[in-house]
Image 1 (spheres, rainbow, N blue to C red):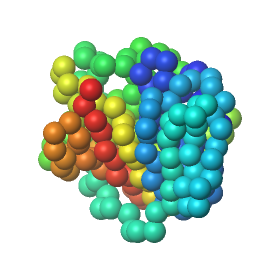
Image 2 (cartoon, rainbow, N blue to C red; image 1 turned 120 degrees about the vertical axis):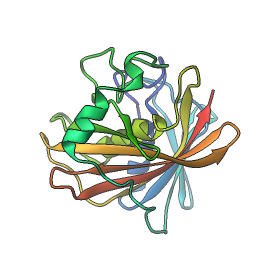
Image 3 (cartoon, rainbow, N blue to C red; image 1 turned 180 degrees about the vertical axis):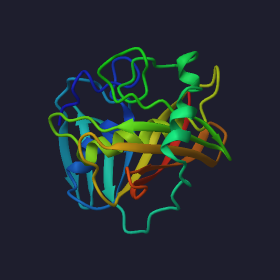
Length: 221
């Protein structure tokens, strides 16, 4: 397993959702949870270790991340907004003026080859953004959905001068989008304590159907 250089989050390391999705793919289909133990380095060939229901990605002897299947129902979806409301919210994306990682593959505005998901506030602790699904190698696929579900959850808790990074992500996929689909992605802060924040995120397809839902833990740095 190798995380390509273009799929970064913070400089020099992989976007959390994309990296987690790559490892989850090693489990096959079905709901999965991935815990990131270290920032996943880019361009490194990880050794995969299978230990019963758990698969680990190792850089040498260092555990970078571990994934496991989930046998539990999906959490409640983040209540949707219309595509027009999501587009209007994206205009107020706080990352345009204060972004800890402006070249992030998913939500970075300082690049032209990312996913371009820019979540802005829509009330009730939620953020929302439009997302047009790209057409490229391996897209659209489950890893793409894992990436899309990542940053919107984070932006429901990130505030000026208070950056967070993904610690754990669990994803339930109902259906895959098609290339060119105009989707809506939402995130919501639902709890946590200390440096940890609990968030939910949901992707809705062009017809308003739920495509995937995630539960995540973000950690302030």
